[in-house]
Length: 399
Image (cartoon, rainbow, N blue to C red; front, side):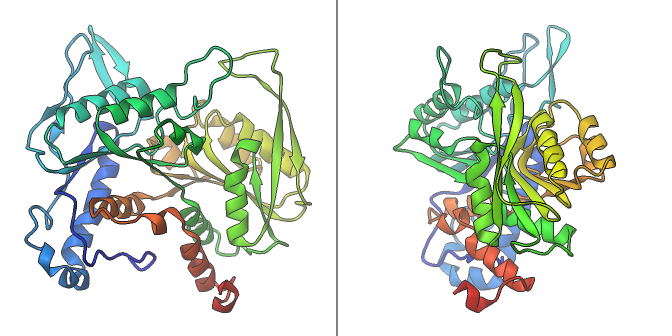
């Protein structure tokens, strides 16, 4: 817990903690639960400071995971069944809407769970938590987050989903690297926290590539399009390096698979020749755009190319990235473990998993104590401390 000022002196939980993890993220939630158990049972100094809380019902527990299930009928319909009381509890409902590995029977046929199925199970869970003191939703990949704005005659799915969750009584929505965080304007009077993992990416980069030099002469942050520019700017500013971006030229007269095809990527930025580059984005969907950006950077004589994205969806499979790695186009791809990753992906030499289970455990424990999450939202101090530790910055420079 050294990286974060983590103490709850003079504060008590808003209610007994219950982590309600749907099947889509059971393994990840178990890691989060283990961390919170460790925080509360083995931090002797913190427990001594909070001696008055030791008698708080359920505070010092062996597990905070809620026992429930979402069985399905043969028709594909479902329900949520709680196997323990949640009255007065502070519920944190966790869901991974991208986990397509789960299946269910529909009239004898096997169907894979879609984002819509996971979202409906989340609503079933919320609907069953009558009597809970508070319900929070932890949804790392924001449901329908890519449909965050309306063009012409379209549905505005993400805004509708947020409003629906609030109408059901959800107090806080916790997500990661939302495609466009301005979608929270749909629920302006309610809690919406959008966390980003630049600190974890930088830490993983330096661990995997210990010979990496962080300065303007050796490293650049790259945004693959105008939408990701804010992420790249934050990354570059905290590392003290330059930033470049690509502009996507699209053919707006044609729609292919629900989107306008990209004609070309145009680069805007300083010279990348001989430099390592880090491409920063929120997700890899098909991967076509990311590989094209990497190809353009190699044509501009970039040295090594690293990709850092919160969500590695890789909807079109791994073959394109296998070829990109074998040809020396891409060196490493860093994604978080916030969503489902296939066993095949985890075995790839070019893939590096960035674990955020401890980070989410901080978030949940902090919100359960109803205290500020501002230090968790802004990782600049942790990034500075990491750079000082690695010798890229001095304490005087940070001041």
